[in-house]
Image (cartoon, rainbow, N blue to C red):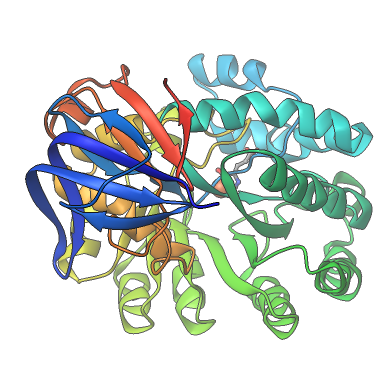
Length: 399
Ligand code: NIG
Ligand code: FE
């Protein structure tokens, strides 16, 4: 049975256009089943009164590390007394300190831990997230994490796009035999991920102290052969050519980019790689080296914004807050930041034809706000005046 919802009395509706988006004043919207059916005309079985306020697409958070168990508040405290992420990671803090608890967790533990996080994403207007494995670092625990992601996506209203990230860090027991771990990722993990058809993307942390250029390339190539699309954690703390490599490998997205240089920028531009910026991480790490968003935009590179939600370097889930950081720290305009958090996030996931904007035929993923215009999103900073969230045509937040 078809079910339709009519959003009436919309003060300002943000719709897709060739240049980004259009503003439509005093209009309505009809959703049928999980899709947008018509704009400005038509009727619906259920009516939602938008009270003359703003209606936008839901946020697409294209970079999260959703599957973790223990919190790392102690690391945060250490940073507040001056320690850096890199120093803490070199002392067995960082990613490897999340691994043991994921390895010993049952799938149900991980599932139950993630549900309230997903509820929070929805309540803050995020309707699709990407989620990476990467705190398992054994074949069994990486696959376990991906299976949990798949179950969560099935059971929860939010859609979750899975990324395999066995190459997130070297497990402690491989510290002196890193090549063996690279071999394990290539020869055991990737074939099993392919077998189970359980990931869309493959990601590598290509960074000083993590996976070097050669190791990253080998891992990404193996992933590509297994049908996975590449994305890269690039130039976060140091620059040794990770963005350059991301371009060469045809990555869909290169993420972080706090330390990207001119060559890296040209590589992203020439290879049409989306630049995904994660200003929440710079903020949460108490650093001031924000990614050069303006330079990237001026080169006509597609810039997306995401949270990087994870237990260590960025415990932030709010896309409205990421927009606030983008306008205050990355010198992006409100419109650029909003586009980056929606349509460009969808591009970073290869899903721009289905989600990320309001257009007839696209998924009905929407936010009904309690504000009149986009500028009020960063103005409210940490309050998110959201009245309703609609996902796949269903009211999933607010009543
Ligand atoms: O994106 N950079 C690599 N991975 C995460 C850090 C995860 C962690 O510290 O647990 C990031 O910032
Ligand atoms: Fe990350």
